[in-house]
Image 1 (cartoon, rainbow, N blue to C red):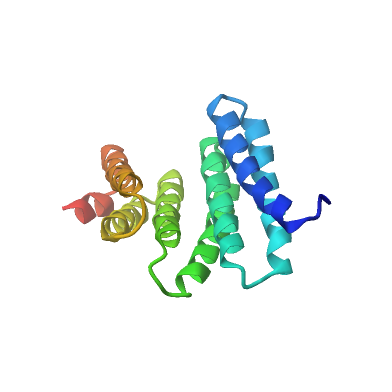
Image 2 (image 1 turned 45 degrees about the vertical axis):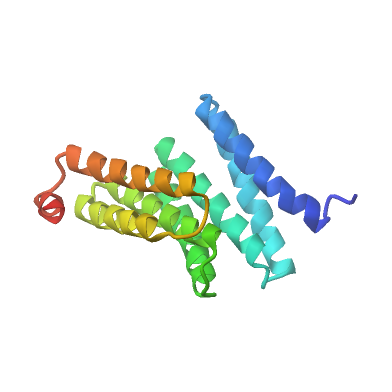
Length: 178
């Protein structure tokens, strides 16, 4: 097949995302970021060919939120914040379609979680805590999708809230917890 084939490009998004996560988890941060950046770039190029394709929008949003998580881990806060905003904009576009699509709801939780993590890294503890609590509420409200995945999201939300609280945070953050 030709390398510009949409089917090949859509599969390469998932491949670059997975390889990027794996490399970063093994300490090859630069290479991991390169693959995740490629996933975002390919998704960005694919979307205009069929703007109404919600699957491609889903993959693009997921790729950006994955990339943002790795950027945060690498200490690149400004880039992580930009990728989080762009990914969450795409999640909002999916959510505006309505319906109870499990993958869209998972991305809503991922978006809120990433925003809370960016807030925490920025020392905006009150904002981070509010976003983490919204992620918890959204993860608890999910009624569709894999039960184990939903339970993991709930647990991750509780952990994020605990991390923010354990840091001591600001007086506003401590008040918001009570």
